[in-house]
Image 1: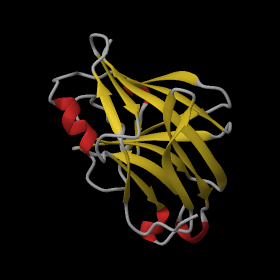
Image 2 (image 1 turned 45 degrees about the horizontal axis):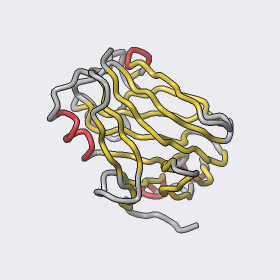
Image 3 (image 1 turned 90 degrees about the vertical axis):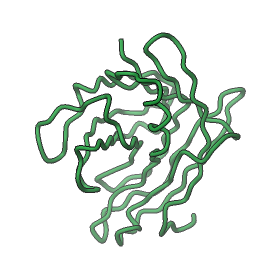
Image 4 (image 1 turned 180 degrees about the horizontal axis):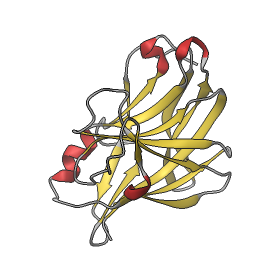
Length: 185
């Protein structure tokens, strides 16, 4: 696998405004560069991995794979979006949570969300989920997200970045995401 010292733009998404109060983000092989692969190598860690779009039948999905290592004060690989939320807020939605369609290798993964309230790259809101072998839909209400350095609540109107993260311990990451839905009902 390649070593990543810089953020590498990899992903392409489609944003679909589905049912009232929902925004669906689907992965595809065409469109813009809204997603980044980032690893702890940006700060001297040794985790390595990659993120790419794959296909199973007619279903496109993002896949985050790699070896997460806590050696050298590291311990993460992630798939992150920044530009995406600028598009979402043009729709004036008030989001209450995120719904994921995921599968994986039975490991615990994290969602990291940063808002304008978060002042450093180490400050974020987080929630965890387990990605099992079969595709499953998981709801994560924003009320379940905890801020790293305080007890503040996550404001669904103030999302700056969104990341799927393999984090915090030594393990092999293999998680796939076919759809991300932000909901307000």
